[in-house]
Image (tube, rainbow, N blue to C red; front, top):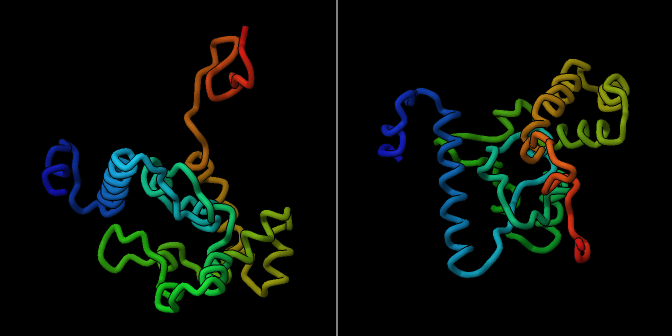
Length: 181
């Protein structure tokens, strides 16, 4: 990695986030290399909690061909893993993207997944932040912070922004379900 870092003229070795994003993107390059060589698909491991919070590297650890657990909150994934017999030490292991030593998801997010998922569930179901805070016995500012992060990270969950100049734009409104002629 040092060779790659040193090849970037404006590289700042103290910038953990940028270094971590490079690492996440390099990982996905290797994963897709093997998938391509073995004629397989890449199965994603991002869950709904991480995705809503934007807790992933754009074009990095979020990249996948299929994402079977992306519509499950972290707490649901853990319950499912426990139910199907995944070993306890894996189910209870603290979440981490492992981009630098000691990195823990809950510390970075500033909230336990058990609480975060309840807030996200309420927001997903159009509950007011005041109502969520009251029902969960939480500070309204915490719920507002979670809601704002959801809103501010929307760009990470969207595909490429495309300047539409044609009649139909590939990937937007140009999909062939039958012979186009």
